[in-house]
Length: 379
Image (cartoon, rainbow, N blue to C red; front, side, top):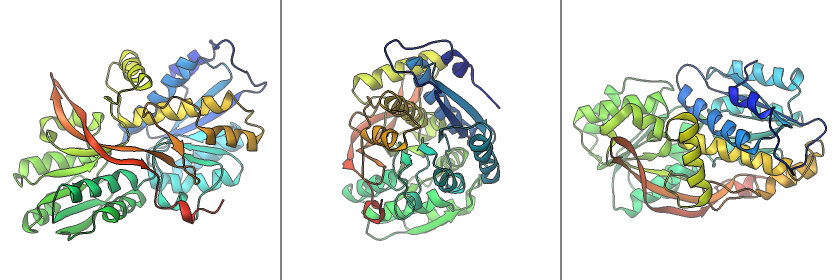
């Protein structure tokens, strides 16, 4: 079992005036803390634990484990947390293939699952469940916004690519839902791939006028650097996952000018977001990422539900989660009938602020966007 320093601190502090459950609430966080994509899980963990620390809840215990980005490891950890650790709530998974391996079995055993990131279409539509809440988005959303942005911007022939796993498939499906014109090419790459010479050659020969790609973590770092070095020079649009703060630190100026879509940005103008950005930077010495913001909101949603209901009363606790009675760093936030967010999605541009490569909002791609699978969810 791994416990963070922040988790230990929460046991020593209580926020006066808030209800304390006799047995408390135990959370099992399974996330990626080593290997490829570790930065995403670390950011989600750190955002979540910052909110826990700030709330000072002595009745909230968090057990944290590393899934190593392996579905079989995630399943083993979930079984241990449910059977041995007796957790009430699970959270933390970054990757959709891991979510598909863990979430259905967890909610079938009566556990609540709050997603800090992964939100595959299979869990939004026919596979929805009253105990499963995505606090991030539905996987298609940011890609839908990118498709809408490219269509509105007058591009006629984008080349699109994503890795071949559930989130990658949702990505291109979402993009094509709002970009319905001609494509110069469409390819799925290998999950974890780092050499994109062949794909860049295809883009060069395709007659494309733009490029859309979804390649999270190290995949995006590799592609962006190789694409910049190639001299192809076509405008690039992507979701925030490929141009988030952790990615930009590794990519550097090769990403300048890229437009990307996100439901969060550090410059969203509300008090909760300003306090979060300042608090995260003070706690960890770095700017927060999208994953950190999602982790922070997930913890605050959970805490808002703990304030209203006992987790042992599943119906009341479910209603408390559904109410989403917390100050989201995104501003407007509510749940659709399939427990996925309704929220604005922005267009950001990669810029340089002093010595820091970061993002700034340049427009709104979609207002109050829900998701395409609500009507398929019968619960």
